[in-house]
Length: 169
Image (cartoon, rainbow, N blue to C red; front, side, top):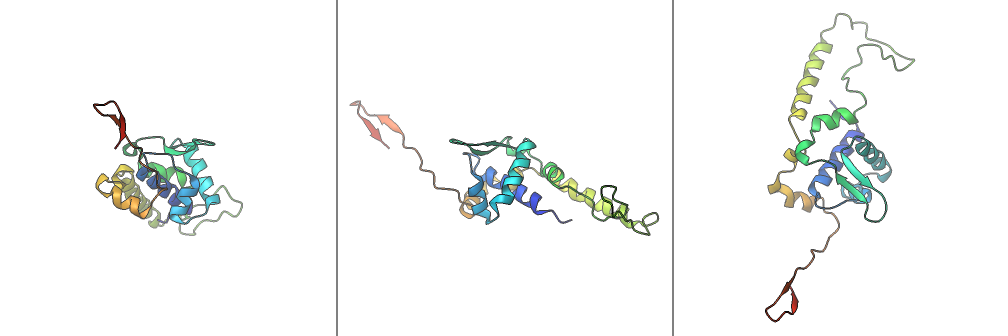
């Protein structure tokens, strides 16, 4: 099974957002991290937003954020919702197009059944995998190193000393 670029970019986007779940990220940031087209990524983001997988906001303070906990995002669901055609082979006529043709063996060939079982096994693995499974906490530092976001300064904390003078730590 070969996934489309649309699905590939959707999965990469969710992975990036999962790594940087502590803040909103931008389309430009994701496109730069993966060296992919921003124009294509906009379409992917729009679809993920419509599917309710991400929260996309425009303007000041905007950006992208996962709409669900990574443990609740099943990779199989993402693939089903972003792939337009899950058929592995085109044995039967496609009623969506004028040039619909079918294989001359379609009524007696067993290949279709075997491929259907293979696709079922493929999807079973993806259905058993969540976004959190792909982002184990012990690998976050390594993943952030490979897919860095902008350097966000850590805010300093202020404490009051016995002399009531604030100091920075």
